Image 1 (spheres, rainbow, N blue to C red):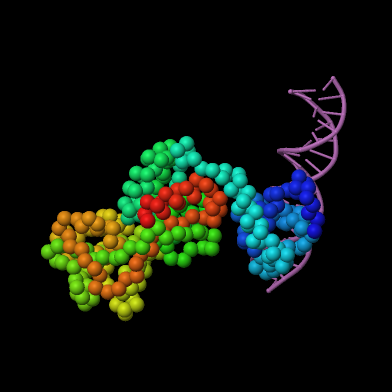
Image 2: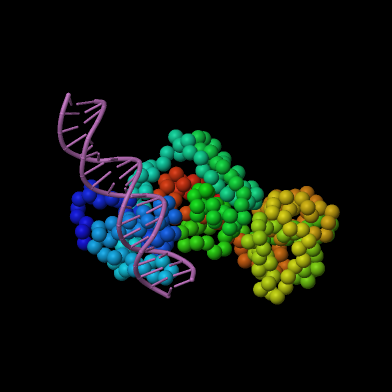
Length: 298
DNA sequence: TTTAAGTGCTCGCTACGTAC
DNA sequence: GTACGTAGCGAGCACTTAAA
C-alpha cells in the first residue's frame, strides 16, 4: 500500500476513476462514463495500481475482472464519494432563497395528480424555484434520469437499472368508466364484450396493468382506441359503448354523463412512483423536492 | 479473428521557483 | 505583485498486445 496520510500527494480524481471502473467492469465504458478517452482511463488505472499497490483488475475477454482488493474497496469508496458530493453540493438547501430549476417528467395523469398540491406548497415556501415538466414513455423517463437530462420522473415503473433509486408516492385502485346510459359492466363476460380505450404512453407500456390482470385470468380485451393521454380519455366515452379502465383519480370527480364503478375482476393496485439517479442522493435540493412530493401525495 | 486493454510518444496545461 | 522559465503530469493519437 503506497498511500500515505499526505492527501496533497494523491489525485483524488483517481477515486472517481476507480468508482467508474468498479461500476462498469469495462475500461472503455468507464472512460465514456466520465467522460475521457480509453488511453487516458488506462493511464489512470496504471496510476491507481501504483497508488494502491494492487493490480485492481485482471483483463478478460469481456472487459475487466476486479481483484479481491478492488472489491473490498467498492463499498467504502462509494460512501466516501457520496460524502464528498454532499460536501460540495452544500449540506443545507434553503428553498425560500433558492433560484433553482428542476427538470421533471410525468404523464398528464401524473401532472394532474402531483402538481396541484406540490405547486400550492412550492409557491408559498419556494417561490424562486422553477419546474420544467416534460412528457416521456416509461423507458424514456428512465433513460432521461440515467443520463442526467431529468432530475426526477414520476410514473408507474416496472424493472429499473440498479443505479436508479425509486420511492412509492401512493397506491391507487383501478375503476371502470363508461357512458352513463351504457353503464359499467358488473360481470367479466360483459366487460370483455365491450370495446375498450387503452391509455399507454409508448410501446413499452403495451402490457399495461389491466391487460396483465386479464392475462392472468386467461382473457384479453379488444382495444378499439389506443391513446397516450390519461386525462383526455374520459371525454371520449360520452355517447359511445367504449369502456375505460383507469386509475381512480383520473375520474375523480366523476365527469358529467359518465358512470364509474369497480372493475369486475381483481387488478393489483397501481404503485405510482418517483425515480432519480443514485448520483443525486447527495443533492440536498432534490432531496427537498422529493420530500415535498412525498408529503403532497401522502 | 475479433475485441478490448496496454504502451510509446507528443502536446498542452499547470504548478512552482526565480528574478525584478 | 507580476512576469517568465521550467519541470512534471495528464490526455490523446496511433499502434501493439493479449484474451477468448
